[in-house]
Amino acid sequence: MQLWSLKMADCVIKGRPALADKWAYDNGVVLKGLINVWRITNDYKYFDFCREFMDRFIYDGGLIRDYRPYDYNLDLINNGKILFELYKQTKNDKYKRAAFKLRRQFYKHPRTSEGVFWHKKIYPYQIWLDGLYMGMPFYIEFINCFERDKKYSDITKQFFVCYKNLRDKKTGLLYHAWDESRRQFWCDKKTGLSKNFWGRSMGWFVMAIVDVLTFLPKNNRDRKQLVEILRECLKALAKVQDKSGCWYQVLDKGGKKGNYLEASCSCMILYAAVKAYKQGYIKGDEWREMIDNAFNGIIDEFVLITEDGFINLNKNCSGAGLGNKEKRDGSYAYYISEPVICNDLKGVGAFILAMLEYENLRPPV
Image (cartoon, rainbow, N blue to C red; front, side, top):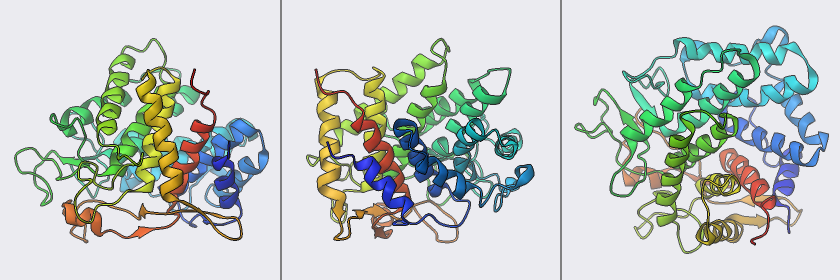
């Protein structure tokens, strides 16, 4: 089997694509992939790359360059997932101190009336699916590493409330975001929901669940409900999987003019599905077929190898959001208007994560 995870990880180490020199969540997705590659291969070039990159930002005493805690921005937490392994392997106290700085953000981070973190301070009363991935896997790993009182209810509550408020009963899919205040121009004034099912936002959500379940104790009382939410989300995603094996930018509008198969969400959904399958959260030949089709579809649809041996991951949405000065309205026309680029870091990171999980999946019985 072609080890696509290692090939893409090696491309990153060689600087194609290059990580951005800023404390940005998309770097964290790639670094998480590289750390996972290191865990499987025990090749320290991947670990060393992550450490050297993080050392550009983590100073003695745990100060983090470019991190502004009072922005209360969940995106700024994502890079922190790398700190646990760096501290474990090096015992350098600066990584632990940096993790504590990120953890403190949650103490005063603004929340909805039901206790879910706002996506950012500049997005008041808003839950975005993206935020669950940015914050919750870090939060639970921090608890397991550094807190004596192992309380997980604040983490599981984030998923339960989000699922309750953002799920569409007809399709089972989750809308990109929800405004509790019903004030945002992009939301339905009765429900508070945004208008569409954006592929990557659901990719973030299901990745967040499988990663949190990795650290949630088997006997935790909320575990069964969280697994059921994951299962229901994957069922809904399986229904909108294209015959190519991939998923569309706007999930439920595959045949509509302008829509396109999108790489990052396809990789994210594959990652979550494979991890769920390995853990027995989903079972049966139909799930294995869904997973195999997704893997083959991603390689066939998005991957090209250049003449000098580098991998290009094509058809990534460069970014999408709601509101702000760009007046992003969440319409179908908006989601398909965002630039489609090659080797977007969010897609590259998700590709490494997904390929690594698939490559280590046992053959069908």
